[in-house]
Length: 207
View 1 (cartoon, rainbow, N blue to C red):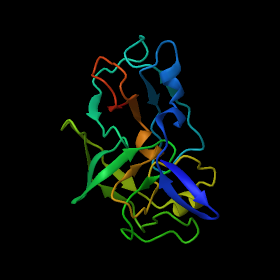
View 2: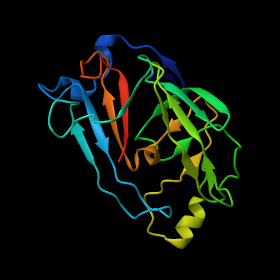
View 3: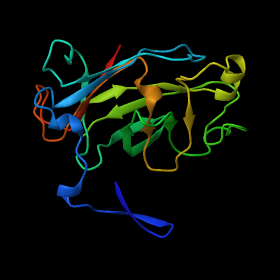
View 4: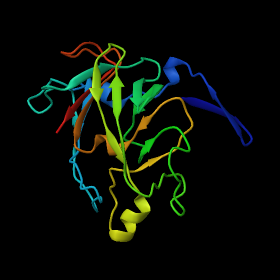
């Protein structure tokens, strides 16, 4: 999304293709059809740090093979797919390593007292989740909503917490960084050719 601002008021706007930012991977001379992110899982009480890999290209080298990854195509405009969490379906859902939590709905659980913007249920709450691509391919993606304040009290060194979630109010689920923990996620760039079809699509593999 691009924005235009007049004073302190900003609103979404369109931008000519020539002025839009490229994904830099698409400009590489090779290994340029997408990326592969692989992160380890963490204990339920979190971890102080993790180490993962970002690999360029999909099916272009011996270290970026799809294997048995589920391939879900996404909307070419916003990169969205459909997610069902519990009994509710969210059409405008997406995966995003830049978000630090699962963000969806609002008022589902008690809010944190100190960590504003996050859910803090008294007990961890399991959430059944199903992703569905535009091609009809589905993938179970269950997750847990925990209490980050209790986790930090028990382990103040926690910096990576897989059960972090918060409200959003949008018609979609933002599957943030916790979703990527314990998974390998492929992102095929729009209009780029891969062995699994032309992008955009997401490939998801449980580690």
